[in-house]
Image (cartoon, rainbow, N blue to C red; front, side):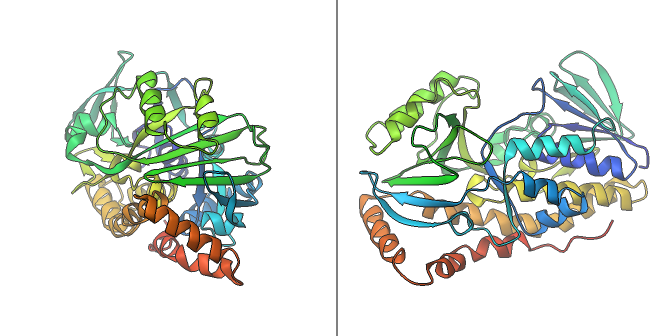
Amino acid sequence: MENARVLISGAGIAGTALAYWLRAHGFRPTVVERAPAIRDGGYKVDIRGAALDVVTRMGLREEIRKLRTDVRGGSIVNAAGKRVASMDGDTFGGRQREDAEILRGDLNRLLHESAAGEVEYLFDDAVAAVDNGEARARVTFESGRVEDYDLVVGADGLHSATRALVFGDEARFVHDLGHHVCVFSVPNHLGLDRWELTYVGPGRTALTYSTARDDGAKAMFLFASGPLEYDRRDRASQQRLLAEAYAAEGWEVPRLLDGMDGATDFYFDSLSQVRMDRWSTGRVVLLGDAAYCASPASGQGTGLALVGAYVLAGELAAAGGRHSAALAAYEREMRPFVERNQKLGPANIKRMVLRSAGQVRMSMAVLSLLGRLPGKDRLMAKAVEPIHRAATAITLKQY
């Protein structure tokens, strides 16, 4: 498939990283994105383990280090705002020494710029139909243009339109973990200086943090819920659901909620995982959250996107024109890694959102005691060791 035309649907982390690697291997990638430009802002994400190796091979490791959030530490607070326990930033975020925490938008922009001028981007457009032919895939865009490609990659997220067009309704593949998440920018009314505060109530967690190079702050909400009925494009209904879920909570929650009306980066969705028996059919293949979303609770969505992009491009280059062999190899390499990381989601959410008032009281007591113990950072490091084992559970080939 040398010099082959590849369409990538979605200019998120997975899509922009894949475009870089495909171009490096001599392919001709085109990225189509519904948004008018690369999406900026977003919440903070971690790059660790194999994903750190990928960005190093891209020559971006030092640039990423310069853009780190530089969060100095975090505290758990009770309803009265008292800090029950505090830890340094890496311990609080479950990071080891070389891991990097960066805003999602900063990483996305960096990946996009890494192949600037060498990759065609089609903004304000999207895939409307795919004729998955034997020799080529014919794509009809929402703009009306029709193009033939050697391969189509769906890298368009949890609610992938490409997946729906080719594989069927998302209800078959998207599995709700019984929680919802919401993130948006807010004024830094607490005067946080690269610090994170987390409040835990029964079935409800709320946190706010500030990062380097940002005068404002982010608010994040995680709450237990059954399936919620709402239009994903109806922001007003999502804001109403969030306000109702946190109506009885104290601390700074009411003031944080006041900030959502003016936020330009409001994000609301279920915590879900994507589980599929296969990620490709014919000349269409899925990547990142579209294929194997592990949920934000795993802490590994960015890692899976970066590693998946590297492996998919590498196997396509190594297969010598046999796309079916390349896609099969991509699944063989990635599936054990994906399954290991997906297990983190359901396990982590139980620690992030506590179900009962009794669990909250017990947790606050334990954290208060832990905060006074010598060697608390080592104890916390042991608690997050499963994340690091999962993050390194793949040996990257040299393609």
